Image 1 (spheres, helix red, strand yellow):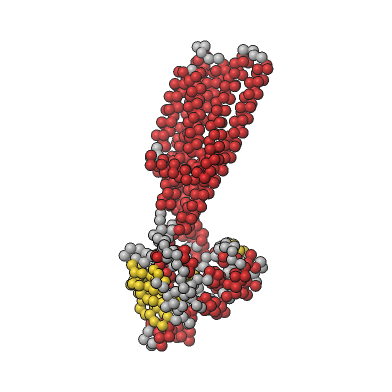
Image 2: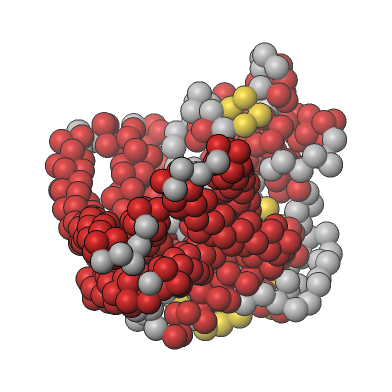
Length: 583
Ligand SMILES: Nc1ncnc2c1ncn2[C@@H]1O[C@H](COP(=O)(O)OP(=O)(O)OP(=O)(O)O)[C@@H](O)[C@H]1O
């Protein structure tokens, strides 16, 4: 049985999502209980019909009873349809709100959370886990109450017919419930494994589908198929086990139904044989005995559902209880046009005791542009992530002008920093939506201006439907250069005060490279900027240079000073590039 603590969790969750629709929920509950009364009344009408017929009763009365039975049945059907409609409505509204809350919560978490969960796994948690809760929101407790009431009502109706009969059938119902509860015990653990296997399987699948281009290019399709079959086998075995364990209470309940029907028939026949029941009463006893199995079966099903819900609620609560390690700042800050950036003895590691940024200190004066160079893995992108507060440093301070980053509201901070990452995320939608992120308040002429500034005017002129032209998911159909320029256009539209460009390492043709360079110069004009460069040509015009090695600054100075110093790393790199080009 779910523990008391779980019950309070259930009630809190129910209250939170059902409160806004309490009126509909109340009507639904009332209709469900009305349907119990109707279900208990219908057999009484049939009993009267049989007994009046056997006594050679008057046709008029028989017709009246038949009409009454028909009316009760029709009314019951109508009430059931409306109650089911309302329960679906309640379930959808509650689960959709929960999905929205989960999505918003996940989006508020920091990057380390995303690094430890695949996209498929998160989809499973937002959608499938919540899906399993639909019955919980709309029915579990109401139906449990409803069927318990039907069970008690049927037992009372049987006891009113004959006390001994009521007692025997009561013992039978209690026995069924106890056995089913006992059988349900191992189901929870299996359900949890099922949900986890689901998340793992779909997580891996989504990862493999997203990386299809790389997988093909590297001839890894065979490996992927092997891994797919391995995961599939695990997934299938887990759900088979959970399914079989979960089916046990159901199999037992089927056996119990038959037993209940037989018991009712035998007892009815016995009461008739000793003259304590009319044929109509025998029919009534049989009908109530089978009617008894309906609430029993439904209670078993609802208990099973509650168990499934319990697993999903645990997973949902676990997700909701995660908090971002990045705490929002309290100051609403508007920075001056191009603020200075200061890193003061900053240390950071993604894992404990593995620093990727070590004692990093530099001051980038207002309006200057800094180029960061270094081997792959030197920690260049990590600097950008720290400045954008995707992570907080383990020690040290980062400032924009005189404000430390944690002082500032995250919203304000990120609004004032434009960040272009190596992989530009484009989604299925119009060019307009890809640039404005669905902000309808941005006028088209601003968007066109941003495209023009980014050097995409000619590209735009070729679009068949202008800003309404649809882009494919992931930017399929766009070149790497075009995708990067679209990212520039996004930044132009936001007009931030600081720009961070983590340059894509893919090669661009000379013409596109020139366009990118021109757009870049405009982008960094009158803004403080950081360019994480993979090509020396990208930083031909920057003011300052940092050369990074294993997270430490090995060289820092103005570009011209470093270029003119024959002993500097930077002039060595320039020399090397010239030699490569001449070779
Ligand atoms: N999410 C992460 N979890 C753990 N380690 C990470 C993570 N991201 C990066 N690293 C490690 O941190 C170090 C610095 O990574 P970073 O991405 O900053 O390097 P980089 O200089 O930008 O490299 P590149 O030029 O290839 O983009 C690398 O050793 C990398 O493996």
